[in-house]
Image (cartoon, rainbow, N blue to C red; front, side):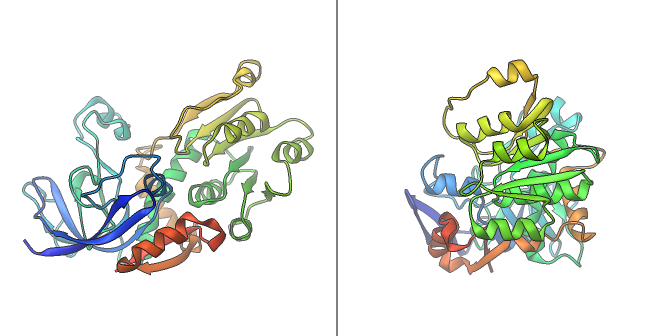
Length: 345
């Protein structure tokens, strides 16, 4: 097979373009001509060495592209299809797949576990994680389906309705999309905490009712005043760290819901007494699956194509793949004004 360019981690805060072999897709797999890929918070965890780095395979899972080759047994996709990609494969046979919880598939494999992901000229992915996109959807929108699906599921896990006040902790990509998904669901009132000015501005554009800048205002005091001491009906924590978990527990009302969707990469010290006396319902949100009668991915595609979520508002920077080193530096430093950084081909 021919060579292709791929972005490979070479050390802590080091990633560079290398020439690698482009291999044919194996049985059940599909190869895409990568068009656009987003740098995710989990990619940054790997970049900083919090999670494992592969020094031989390109990462990247917020991906959109065109099918160029299909492996043995793949019949539902063909060359020319515009698709987006889930970050893992699933077998479709185990008890979790059969009951709509395929994010817990007993044979789940990450998109780049033994093949190159979206930070390469060609992405290889299992057909089980592919979704066809309408012709009207841009490649940029297609690369935003994955993070929106993560957030859509987190909001669904909160089970919030038009009666509820929902708080989102964190103004990054997942936090902003949680805000957008909550607005699309028609919740009563939304609040989001932010750290940077660009996050505050975006949150206002997405329709947040309350934007709390943590450098200027204590979220606990703000919520206490806003709700007359009652608390928020649901809190979605998207940042990680013990302090943010404690904040979520402090601002949720008794019997309210706390959803954890952040990337927790180390043990935390958290005051759990609040859970005991408030009876707050604490749950996690793991990627995406079926939160209703359809998949979270398909629901997110529909939210974008219907115009209910203007996903491209989140993209602040765009770089060609060859400038991946600079792209990661910008994505890793929010003082750059970054929210979502995309690699475009």
